[in-house]
Image (cartoon, rainbow, N blue to C red; front, top):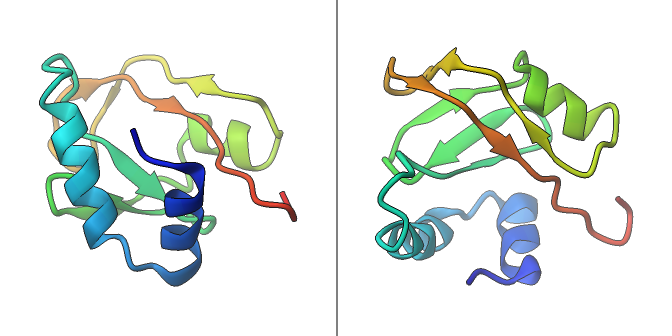
Length: 98
């Protein structure tokens, strides 16, 4: 399991490749998951599939980043990365500043 410290460091430095490798290993144990991603505060994402995109317009991102909810689960939507039907689960990673 990834530590909060590892994720915060990746968000601060945008050095996410090692983090993605760790997430890929964790996904092996979760075959129902298509991919995982880290969203930066501006909404840009890095995914375990090696793709990048932007989720700043997505409701789940807005809820955790602007409304401060503990977690958000999207309704059904189309993945910007794969074009497949998905739902997303978002949890904010907060450092001492938020």
